[in-house]
Length: 148
Length: 324
Image (cartoon, rainbow over all chains, first blue to last red; front, side, top):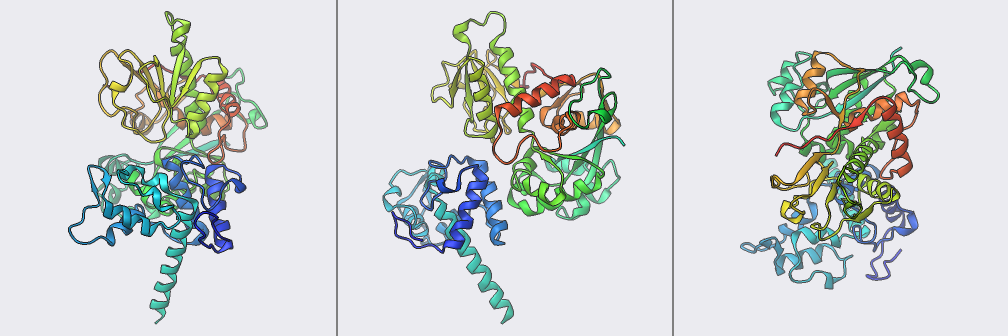
């Protein structure tokens, strides 16, 4: 299953479950929820809906989604002394880090002047697919480490 | 057997959290030493009862057992602060399950505050405990709409001023409120950018938006059902801000000593109650066996049904100003 805009390939069974979580949380028909759908702009999510989406994904994949995970992951990769934001506006370094963490979002959307409060407007359904996959991989790696 | 429901609440501050253990002398909780996440930390804090009007207010299949009778509500509290509930929904769910257990036998569960928006908006709890779970949205929407109608039709309100801006129309409550007011024939603005031309504003965001009062007309009336509240700071004295979800208690409302304490500590006041608390009570009186709302969808028709059942029991929204 490939995203027609980004050409990213998704595991169909996992993407199906992710789409179902969105459809259930937002009261949308499944066919309206596509990997590239903007969670706020296209699917009409409001801030509290993200709680419901996270809860449904946690149960569907037996994972724990940390709050603010995308921001934390972006900050991790930044060089010492680099600022993440100035007066609520993301720095170029932060935009680059975010773009690297969110390949499902077209690069031109990481424009100069983007505010921290606007980052959620970039989220696609595929953003949460990637989070779920990453957390499942981390969990598997942790389990393997414990066994060893 | 007296039909009974549980309404699950949580403290808003660390001080309030310690008070939860008072009723059952749970001093571990009171001293803050007990593990907050443990299921035994859940406590009953109060009981309320509604003695139904003898002329028959109940409707539906179970009305025969309720008319002229009593519905009892057990108020149970989980000792989690809002940020803890939002950060760990699975733990909050376990504690809600425990609260439903300690209140048994019950036929409905109501959720208050942050508990109503986590764990799939009550759906996960409904699955695990097998009981209908209400989130307060139908009651809140009914209270907000009823108050908007009263304010819009106040004496001296010219037809040109029968305009209302509804904030939060992407949310469950805001969407239903806008739809119902539009059906009444009022001019409704859905989240308009410029609010200064709107004499009446309904603040229905599911979270506070920190709105500057200067963005509203100085003589506007704001009917506020958002928590945290809609405005970021104290409004000018010319602006009227009403507690949108506050209801006058009917004559049949009874409570024990702890119930009186609950009314004061929860901020209801002694003669009022927040709409969300009565949702399971009204459901039982109406003979319902399902919740008023499932997930995010709340139809205008459901709000109307709820309103009719609540009014039959004597509940009515009150015009009550928020303290400045």
